[in-house]
Length: 106
Image (cartoon, helix red, strand yellow):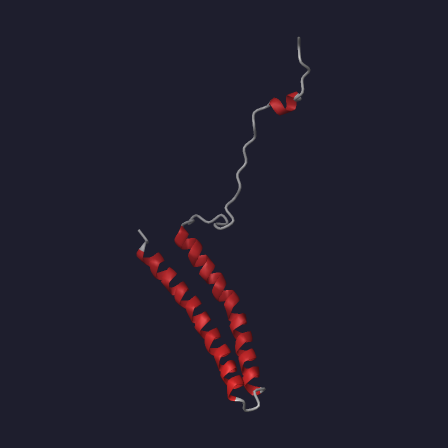
């Protein structure tokens, strides 16, 4: 007894191979974890600058609209201080990644 052909002969050809490009490397020759982390730190610096500016403006607005209340003035100063501290951490991470990259060069 012969079974009917369920799979057309076009599917019986050799399988075609394809590659999926790595989105983190985007075609560059260097694709190490240090390079990826350094690229992420660069993006954080680029994205963090406008956020830092907005938070400083917001903190200044809170101070200006405090009306002399010490709690609101302190809240405005805290917003500015923590925004600068957060951006400082981003800069430090970028510096550490650059240092590690220089130390690990062959």
